[in-house]
Length: 338
Image (cartoon, rainbow, N blue to C red):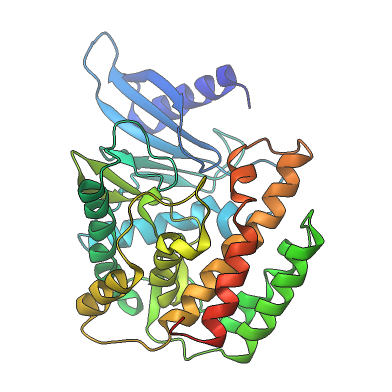
């Protein structure tokens, strides 16, 4: 979809859904890595002041709509979370109707702030230790609020919980794309260990699926919202704290590519468990699973980047770390105290 086509489609949508008195005032691609995500503004015709700030998410055309490519499925989730007072964007417009964009879509209200991309933050963020650590702590301290959300009341028909063994096995078809054979060897060993040590899926409920400061908005060093819910689901919620600890764990990274000033993983775990009011022996397993997931994603995306199918130099940096991610996952599964 060309920029001019998207502008015309948006203008048609604004006219039909927001009213003939409104027009498109600006359109920009998102500066993140969230795929087909666009920022746009509206104003009343003849006025200078902006009337609304929005985010449009659409899936790629011609791609099966499931998981992270099923954009429309996020609408009931975000509306329920927003209605419960959680810091997520509201979704005033969402439709499976393909009339305006040729695909289903959601339009969210745009929250203020920027995400803190932990490996290479925007220059507006300080790289000093204290302010950086504060962003990580705000991230983990917000997580129990999501995990305590009463999904059985508000999202009973949204999705069925997915068993952990199915969640593990799905990554095989992803890591087998690896351009490096030794990554596949490592992945197969970690997969075997994961399947042989599956813990109870407790607590079970809404999980984000990619929970880390790169999906948290901050303004003036204060958290303003949690975004990018493409990987969310109903299931084992310790996936989220495991993912956050994986991103923070210094053993996963190299000097050229490492997270900026995370607190110790033990502190992140303590903060989460304090917020939940109990401890969880299985957290190291979920941290290992997170490393396996990210490294498996890396196997595919490094191949796509190197072949020129999906240009993104960040994956060449991530390639430096994939063996570390697999090895750290193996260590945690063999010795949770490692």
